[in-house]
Length: 312
Image 1 (cartoon, rainbow, N blue to C red):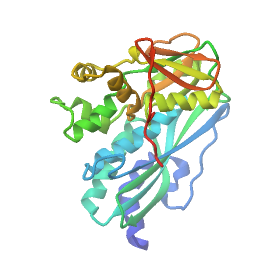
Image 2: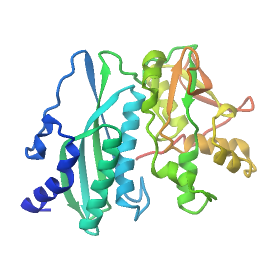
Image 3: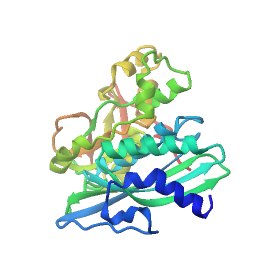
Image 4: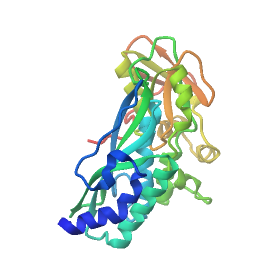
């Protein structure tokens, strides 16, 4: 997109999303200032989503924008950070005319307001490829208080928030491969809820944490690798929703089905390690000496091939 048209569109669609942040300069500059907050560290994360990879081709642009916000805030949630601002980059394909761009900006604004996040800047470009968008999210944690993947200690419990497997089943539901009469599973996939409500629990009790985006086993594996320990997971303890439980009841091989839920990704819950299981979490394992991940069902070891989504 060229010169004046690009800046006119930025002013029209995105300037209202700054929330009046002083450092955004009404998006009239090509840089922003991030204010300092004494006694706090600035946490920065970045995620991108691509049409046909992270959301279905033809998905409503407003839903795409809201998912973009939420998957980034999920990263901040796992760090026990309080989100406050973001930077946006979008690559519009030729099929994205004014109506689609306005719908994207509208959805973006809806969730930025919901979560109290201001837009500080970014970039818009055109692309011959699929629609692609990226968000850089900023959050605050008390100085030295970010919950890292490193920090799990032998003897800690491994616990996860919410329910696991709904995102993977939701993707299958959008493809017509899983029954979803109420549309609940598809909604869980399209519009995940970042677990920002767990901030105080994580700050007070977690030794390590990660958001469950690529798959529970894969993301637990990141904690094991960063902490230099072994995580032993019992899939019999996997917390599942009523919809996932109904699906499990139809599966002939329970071990494989549980593994599918635990490796599917897109749940955007938080897996962490703690001295004891905190409120809002379900214990699914233990931290042991060693390295890597061991998984069992019914007390028997289970070999897991693909542990989660691989980007390359």
